[in-house]
Each structure stands twice: as structure tokens, then as C-alpha cells.
Length: 447
Picture 1 (cartoon, rainbow, N blue to C red):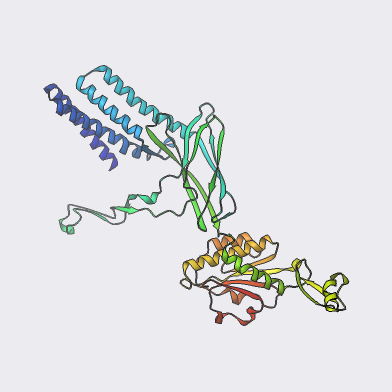
Picture 2: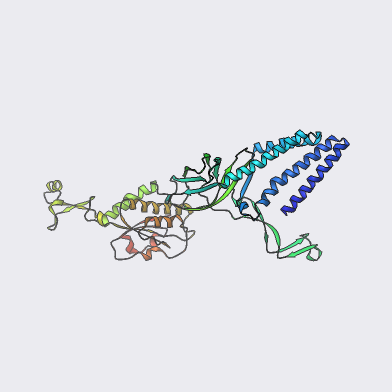
């Protein structure tokens, strides 16, 4: 249909050009100008709208690169100037003006060939960080290699292409094509089964990794240009980049030509681990209960108690002994044998609000990151999580976690161990097993 529309447009342009010549010989200047302008305008519309669309669908190795074209203000002004000069050439029959029009049109052709050759000679690569946290800036490196050995690359911009979900697409879908469409079947002129032309909207793409632009003014032949770009993600989750666009206005800035490069990248953004007020309020209580639960040898003072025959004299607190008149010893927390289990008890959908759920995920991630930095022996538990003692595996699970109905993790906590539990849950207090209260600290999402 696009092809036949182009043929029709060119036929109308040719007809208008023929009649403009007829009116010129008849001495009607106004009709000549209008028809000549209409002919040039129709030919230009076909060249801009239909030709690139059809060229991208030609099954030739050289044409498999997908290009997008956007007319700049300079290019629009240049086309208007070509139109004015072309009308003057048709009206006056001056051969010099025809040569000028031909040269101006040739410059557009040369611009297209030069920009396409420049873009095809570029190779794009991105180096992304391995571990990314929400609301924390990270750096990505964009590399653009000029594969051409002689010609340099000028004025190249890397930017995401237009989202396919922002526009409507036409496609053939199962159904019946009928014309006229609103008549009964027996009164329709044309009826083709299993074929229907319909407008559908492309599914919206997920959040993208990169939405900005990187500019390279010059890349020497055979050289590699690189730029470090700061990335910052507001929310946890999975971010994808299926393609990027390499664009240029070179050489005359008539068009912004963009070559779409398929470059699949994926980042899982961990929840934020910032020291929020909630974390600073909860952390001392968890640390105090945890150290009290695992007292023993270490560096942090746990308590001062009466001297026992099996105690070492090195631990005698002489100041406390002098004040009390009896031997006192210092007892320390058992830092070298600390074991902590962090449990994220995922609630069912609707059990808590979305804001409370996000706070619970962030607190679980922040606690895991804090105690991992303290060299604590950790274990992680969550529905569908096989992280074990890997903090990054647990953070990845939290990054993709969504409320889901399932068995509570409290019934799966091993009994009879010396581990201390930190449990993030939305269950009410009355439904928590009694045995867990003595060896666990609970963080309730809804509070």
C-alpha cells in the first residue's frame, strides 16, 4: 500500500508538472506557479515519507541497517529554498537555474551517502557496572570504535531510539476483511477471509538503562572514543536496553540520520541501602539483642560479673573489684562466632500498602548490607530465594521481589540452633510462633 501510494503521488506530481508547462505556454503565471509548486511538493513528500520506508525493507545485506530520519530546521529551510529556485527555473526556463537546482538536489544525495557511510563504519559497546543500588550513582563507559582506516567520524551522538510503544502500528491479523465494512455480508462488495488490516498499539517497553545522550565531536580513523556516563536509578527492579541509536548531522545538517544498533543489556538494580531514620532507629536494638544472644570472647564489652574459678586473671576488672570489694571480671561479646539469619517473609498481595512493602524491602536490604560489611556470618531466607550466604544473591532477590501468596518463612526457620534471626514480616503478632520470640528480632512492615 505504501508503494502504490508512492506511485500515485508521483503520477500526480508528473501530471501537475505537465499542466504547469501547458499553462506557462498559455501565459497563466499564477496557475504555472501553483502547479509547479504542487509537483515539487508531491515529489518531495514521496521522497521523504515513502522512499526511506520502502528502502529499509529491501532484503539486501547493505540495506539491513535500520535508519531513522528526522528533518532539521536547516534541512526544511533548504528544501523550501530548492522549491523556490525550482519554481523560478520552470517559470523562466533559465538553464543556469536548472543547474543550480540540480546541484542543490545533488548535495542532499551526497549528504545521505556520506552520513550512511559514516554510521556504518562505527561499532558501539557499553561496559556496565556489575552491582547497582537504587538512588546511588554509578558509572557506565560508552565506547565508539571507528572501523574505517582512512576517514574520521564527525559529530556523532549516542542516544536511545524512539520507543516502539509510542506509536501505532498496522499489521495483518486473523479475521475477515470486508468492504464496505458496516454493511451486511450479502451487500458487501469485497470479502476476504482470514485477513484483516487493523491498527494495534505496540506493547510498552520496560524501564530503560539509558535515556540521555553522549556526544563525540571527532573520532580518528581506527581509533576508539570513550565517555564515562553517570547512571542513577530511582527504583529497584530490572532495567533493559534492547537498542541504542548512533546519530549524526554530518555533513550538511539537512537530516538527523540515526542508525539503530541492537545492543541487549540488562541490569538488576538492588534496593536502596541508605541509612534512613528507620534503619538508624532499628539497628542499635538489633545489634544489642544480637550481641546479648551470642555473648562470649570478643572485643566489645558485654557485662561485668562475679569472678568464677575457671575465669582467666587477664579478664579481671580491677577498678570494679576495688569499688565492690570482690573480684569482678569482664565478659565480652563473641564476635568471632557471630551468626545471624535475615529472613524476608514475603506477604500476600494486599496485606500491606505498596509504600510499606517498599520500606520493608529496603530495610531488609539495608540490614543485610550493613551486617555483611561488619564481617558477620550471615544466612538469608526468603520465599523462592536460594541465596544461602551470598549477600548479592539475596539483594538480587529483593530487587525483583513482589507480593505473592505462599507459605510463611517462619515455619521453615531451623530449630535448635544458636543463630539469631532478624525477621521482616507483615504477619500479626498473635500468629508468630512462640519459640521465635526468644531468638529473633521482628521488623513489622505495617508499622
